[in-house]
Amino acid sequence: PTISVDMTQWLPADKTFYHYMGSLTTPPCSENVKWHVMQNAITMSKDQMSILLNAFKSLDTASEFGFTHRPAQPINERVVTIGYPPKDAQDGLPTVSTRVSFPFEYFGSPVGLQQQFSNEFIKQVAMVAGVSESAVRIVNLEKGSTIVTAQVTPAFEDIDSVKAKLEDPEAMFSADNGWDTSTFGTASAASTSNDGGSNDNDDDKLSSDQLALVIILCVLIPVLLIANLIACCCLMKNKEEKSSPSKPTMEDAMKAREMHRAGSEKKDAVMEA
Image (cartoon, rainbow, N blue to C red):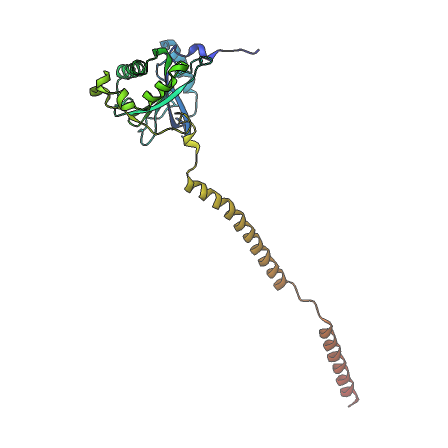
């Protein structure tokens, strides 16, 4: 029988998530795995945990305690971003995007301070831009120290003024406008992302040097294979020519015939004598 399970019912109500490029947690620990980790953990009972661990203990990669994961790895140069679940777009209204950088270390701060930063960011944009807080949405957060990608949905008559204010983040997030610069620092404009603030595809792109190397290898490898085949054929042909006896030519046949005749005449002369 077919059993249908709605996995979304097990997800937390707040579907905010962290994203980074990592690897498998079990051998061979392959890299380039896109991890999406929910910010709010899902709980389970002690009995459920026991069932899960007992199931893991039967795996070849599990330890005697039932664990299948390896120790936490250092972040190194990984870029960690925070994503928010999409909201339904308001039909007919324009959307203006902005990317703002802060010295505030979002990913190294406690969860409470992270939530405060997100709330204060939305309130500040709404207040300075003159829109409601529901019209401001954080699309992505990434390290850098913290780069915020946000979208604002203003009314048509306010779009020009909202654009102008979003293009000046230093003024928008200043102490004069009530921004807590002592906690979150002063803002600056961040470089525009090619994919609208999402880093999902950046890790899959090749640099120009890598692309050139791939092209060279794609051309060079077939050429080397063909040259190798030609060299092998020539060696085999030379070997066959050396091992096989040469075919007698017409001149060789004539010389052999003359030698045979001369030998016969000499033999007759000896017998007559």
